[in-house]
Length: 156
Picture 1 (cartoon, rainbow, N blue to C red):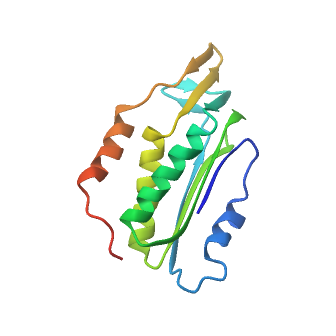
Picture 2: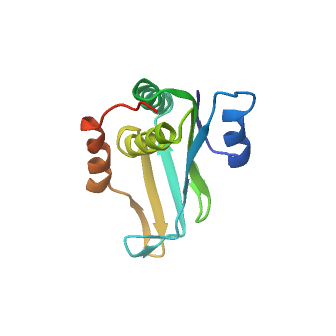
Picture 3: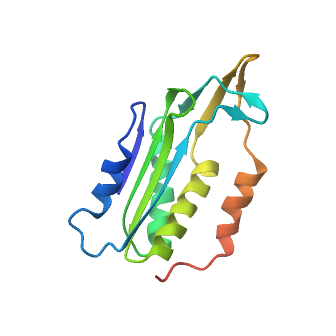
């Protein structure tokens, strides 16, 4: 399991390859790559600053990853989240999951991302032509995370 919070870019291909390299039990790798957009809620975004609480953020990400490992028979996973100054098209987050079967990999990847959006202590400040503004939490993200509370655990 790899959990990282970092300012520098990550190598998507290398991170995904590391999940299945030399492990013949891996039959599926599912990944999600979050990228900075140039628009949010009708506002043109020039850049974004992602802030976090060091130590607390990594612990929250690890708890989310451990919950995914408990729910599905996963072989490995990677969660990398960037912080600091980002511009449109910059990768922000990578969630990649290795499992024997695709259903478990897809479900765990989605679960991790849904919980990351609501349970990890990150704060986003967008810069627009009109100035800077903090990005508020979205009810849709809370609803996405809540739907996992009544879903069965994976079984391949």
